[in-house]
Length: 227
Image (tube, rainbow, N blue to C red; front, top):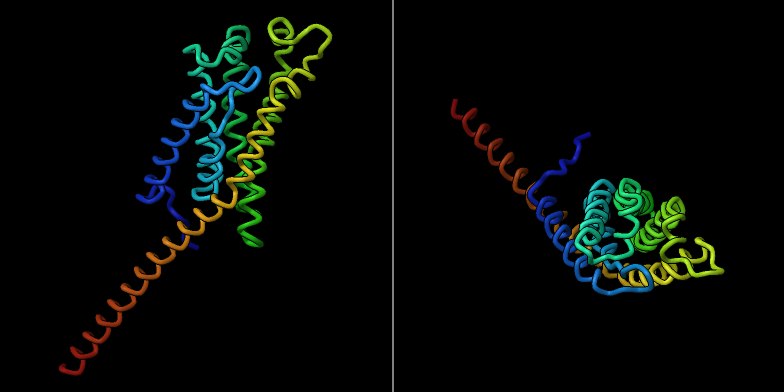
């Protein structure tokens, strides 16, 4: 069976557009605080990349999202992440990269596993899985930095887990989940349009090759008759 090549002109062009979307959306969203953290709309192009280009592309876009979060912290645009970065630099960087990459990877794997049964359902489940993975890993990783959270963000009488679930990640998660739920039909529509376009080009190319082979065969037959 012929293996599909990833580094085609089509895939590189799509990936470049999605990289630009991830950068623009994350930089723009970094200016919108929700509680202690910033809203994230970047999961939309990450999921779209996972659907169109596969799980590894989704993981790459997710890791890029995490890298932008770290850069925003270093420049002072994300005060919450900056505090974590100062006390736990390695863990914070790993958390940002891993949670984003895992969100894209899982979305791509889910879409690939379910698309044979229903592409619409696969797009919806993949879209909703991304914020679940992203927020879930964030909470788990942040619990490892409870000392910093307690010293800087957790109010008296609260627990670190309560702060993370209710005061920090909870509202952000609901926004991300709602945005992805609303965007999932659009993602499905985009995927269908792209897939239809690719199939159309492939059919034309196969048809042209078949016609050329027929013409070559006819020419050989004519030559054989003359001989």
